[in-house]
View 1 (tube, rainbow, N blue to C red):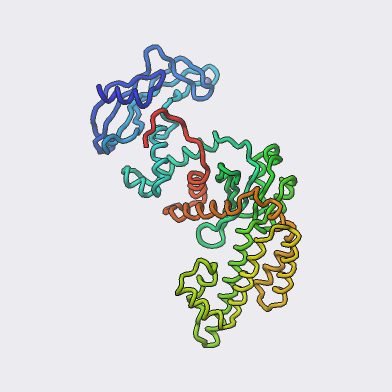
View 2 (cartoon, rainbow, N blue to C red; view 1 turned 90 degrees about the horizontal axis):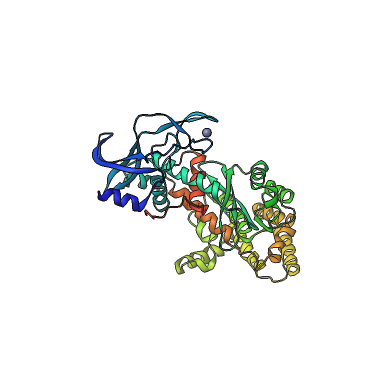
Length: 417
Ligand SMILES: [Zn+2]
C-alpha cells in the first residue's frame, strides 16, 4: 500500500493507524478515501481535560478533508469514539487531525491558508475547487492559532496608524511593531477613537506597555492622549510620513476648492488633471510632467502656493539639531499663517501645537527607522486591494493579521507547499 507508506512519511498520528484506501464518490465527486482506525487498546482523549478515558460508544463515520492528490479530493474517514469522562461527562474524543464540527483537517487548512497568502482568496478557492468561505475558515484557523502562539516579548518600538476601509469614513486602527527585523502588525481594531487604542493597551498588558521606548503616531488627538496615558515612559514621535501626509491632504483640499472656483468663473480648468503633478515630489516627475509643472507654476494659483510651501518645509527634515529645526519650524509657521491658504494654515497651527512631539523625531534619529510605518501602511492597503470579497470588518482584520502579522503556524515536519 504505497499511499499508506507515503502518508506515514508525511503525517503520523500516535494512537491511530491508516487503514484501507479506496476511490469513491463523496458529495457526488470521485475522491480518494483513507480509513483511519484507533490503534488497538488505545484509549480516546477527552477534549476538555485532555486525559485518556474509556470508550463510551462510537459515532457514525465522518469525512475529514485532506490535501488533494493529483487534483483528486482526498478524505480521511473515521468513526469518532465518545469518551466516558468522570470529570467532564460523555464527549466526542479529541482528534489529532481535526477539531469540532470542522470538516477540514488541520493540514488542509494550513495548506489553503498558505496559498491564500500568495494568491487572492478567490483564486485559492477556484484552484482547489472549494468555496471562498472554506478558504476564509482556513485562514481564520491559522490566524487564531498564530495569535494564540505568537511571542510578544521584546516589543520596544511601535507605530500607530489608521487606515480607511470600505467606502465612507470607516477606519481601522493599526498598531505595528517597528523593531528592526520584527516589523509586523500587532493589533488592529475598528474605529480610531481613544477607546480603540485603549483596548490595544489593555490586551497588550501593563508590563509589556511599560517596555515600550518609542511610539510613532500621527497627530490624531485621541491617539496622543492614550499614548501619553498608557506608555508615559515612551518617546512619542510624530514621524515624517504622518506629517507629510497632512501636507498632501491640505494641498488636495486647496486644489479641489480652486477647481470649483475656476469652474464657477468659467475659466479654463488647468488644474483638472494637474493633481498628481502637485502631489508628487519634483524628483519623481518625468520630463514632460516637469514642463507641465513649470507652466502651472507660472499661473500663481493657490494650489501652487501650497505646493511651494510644502516643498519649502521639506528642508526641515535635513536638520541635525532639534533647536535649529525648531527655529525653522517657527519661521515656517509664521510665514504660512500670513498667507490666505486656509488648509495650509491649519497644517501650520497643527505643527505649532505639536512642536515638542515633532522635534522628538530628531531625538530618535538613527534609532528608529523612518518609513517603517509607511511601508506597513502600504502593505495593508495592498492587502485590502487584493481583498476581493471581504465584506465584513472581521474578514478584513483576519486578512491583515494573516498578511502582516508574521504569525507562527502549526508545525509539521513535512512542508506541503
Ligand atoms: Zn474530561
